[in-house]
Length: 298
Ligand SMILES: Nc1nc2c(c(=O)[nH]1)N[C@H]1C(S)=C(S)[C@@H](COP(=O)(O)O)O[C@H]1N2
Ligand SMILES: [Mo]
Image 1 (cartoon, protein in one colour):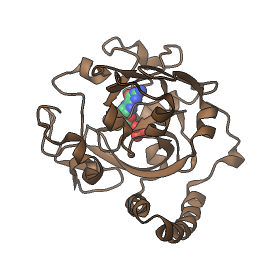
Image 2: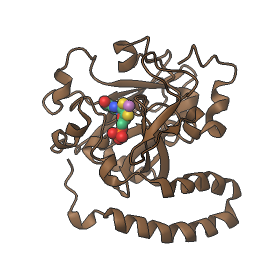
Image 3: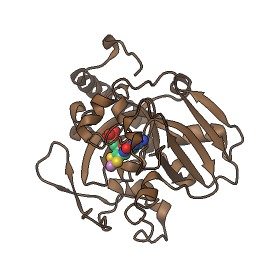
């Protein structure tokens, strides 16, 4: 992992009190200037009181490249090298580019997004990400008319990632979005959480976050983004096509073949809570699926 001097790491308590202060000032300033922008920001703000503790976010992880045991991922990923790191953006674009992670951080202003994360397994968290809209990156590479989908790939490195020795998955981890889904403002590339750079276990140095879809769509440690003409086949579609489809929108009405998706266990809570359609983001994304049969397009 990149060495970050401990003096530059914000403890959770400092992060929380600082954000309370900035949050109240920011809301006042923004409300005068950007009424519609504020409404979006307000929705993230409402989630601030539900934040999952940093400790849980960084010690209970799905990252099969390291381990299929959630509690083992943090330890096994500690030495993961995230610098130097480049992300290659290619395919049907006018301006293909290979971008250095430090340049990406400088080029795109990092903003905070507090999102719910709902894993297909039935647990959830609320995470304060730092990042930038995926659309900002796609706009600079200029997709051509042939680009219909975006395909993402995680690093392939069996030396650093012991889980990639497991031959029943087709490594590297692959995920995909339809181009219009990728352009939606909720889809971000995250580079940090709780005000600090991403820890390896959460997908350092850069990962996708698509909050209205099951967690497995939010691919970690990305090295390649390709604009393609046809629907990419994800690692999970390959592994179990009858259980995991391309869309994977959070949907309490469509059960997983082996369990119900109607409720979830929010990490840190005792009682299960109802799962919301599109994980609570219907207003922003339901229009993307108008006229589609969400039972067939699971
Ligand atoms: N490359 C890669 N990305 C991945 C995974 C993985 O195993 N490998 N697991 C996914 C799953 S199932 C979930 S729920 C989320 C978990 O993200 P978190 O550990 O940051 O909470 O990451 C997703 N991204
Ligand atoms: Mo997941």
